[in-house]
Length: 302
Image (cartoon, rainbow, N blue to C red; front, side):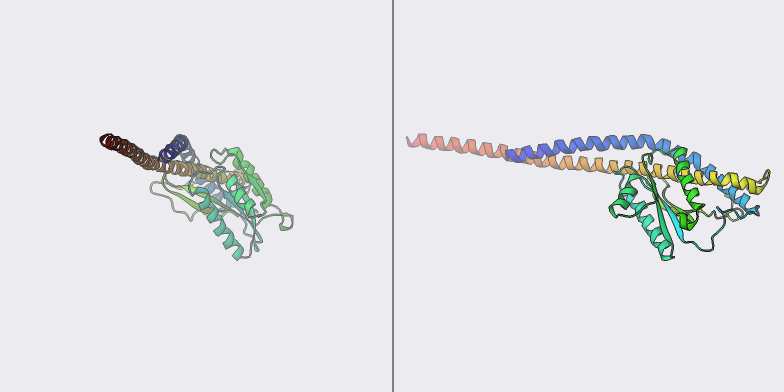
């Protein structure tokens, strides 16, 4: 019984140490999620406005720009998969990886070759374990991305989009990321980044929103050349910010659940330890009473 009591107490100390870690990670994620949400709110209107401006320029342009021209035959499609660098975030990484697998299967069913581009160590580990070839990968900034990180990724994608198929070029670029809806809801989403789908005049304005009027100087074609790289970088940056906020929210929720589970486990182990201690005390009392009865019996016979 004494050995069992020591085992329970050792388990309680171990769970308490784990609880301190999960509680600290929960607080860290909670403190960082506020800034991540602010970054998402600040970047989303700019990305939306820039997309609308590029669409307007494309609508008024007579130039067959390679970034907006649909190719007659799509042979290779690039898939940019945005995952996390660290774990302990619940199903965050697995959800975006499953969405990436679905997109890959759909593109292959259309006869397209896949060129993976990976963001985050989790996606890299997923592909390395399955011995899959990747074109390029980036890591080390998933929970706090900067515009320079997005520009590095965007420049590589645009460069490969401009290459010929024989030189390793791609005909389409898709992005798989996690969209931040709320603290309890994060949705894996897929967008086609290039070729640009012209949405100007198609997307209806929201209530109270006025459609902007554009004047292009020196021309719509020149503006399009200048805006398209910024469009790609801003969209990738917004996707990275959405993914970072989703990762922090998922980690906070996972760590809170782990802390609550640790509390329940500590209560259960404490109850078992108390029962074991009570059993030890009862056994000791029984032994003392038994010994006293034996001495009394031997004394009366004498």
